[in-house]
Image (cartoon, rainbow, N blue to C red):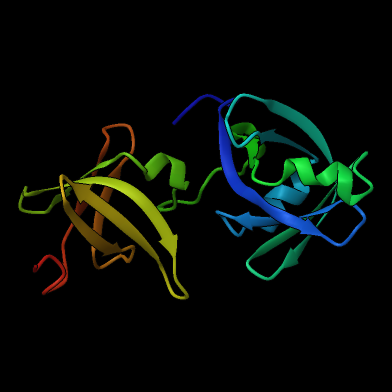
Length: 174
C-alpha cells in the first residue's frame, strides 16, 4: 500500500454534458459515494504535465459513469479543456477496502502464478463485466483473461507483489 497522499486514478473525463460546464466521467471504480464524499479532486492533464486541485459542486450517476460539476466551471467553454484528464483522489480520501477487496491500482503489476507454481505473467489490466472483473495477465506475447472470482483467485499478496490462481479447466489452454 502507498502513503495517504498517493494519487489514485478513479476515472477519466470523457466529454462535456450540456452547456453549463458539466463533465462526463468514465469511472474506473463505479464508487459514486467515495467521489461525493471527497469534495476535492485532482485532475491530471492528458499529457501528465499538469495537476490541478478542484472543488466538486456535485456528482450524479450517469450511463457508464458520472456527471461531475466543478465549482467555478459554469459553461462548456471552461469545461472543454478538461476533457481527457484523469480524475484522481488521494488514497486518504478513499475508504479502506474490505477483506479480499483491492483497489485496481494495487493489483496492476502483480506477478501472477498458478497454485502449482507456474508463472503466467504480470497483471497488466483489469476490466469490468456485468458479473465480475476480468484480470488481463501478460507475459511476452501471451495473454490470459482471468475471471476475478473466489474459485480462481486463491491469494493476493500486494506487499509481496504476487497473486496465486487456480485456473478453471480450459482457462489456460491455447
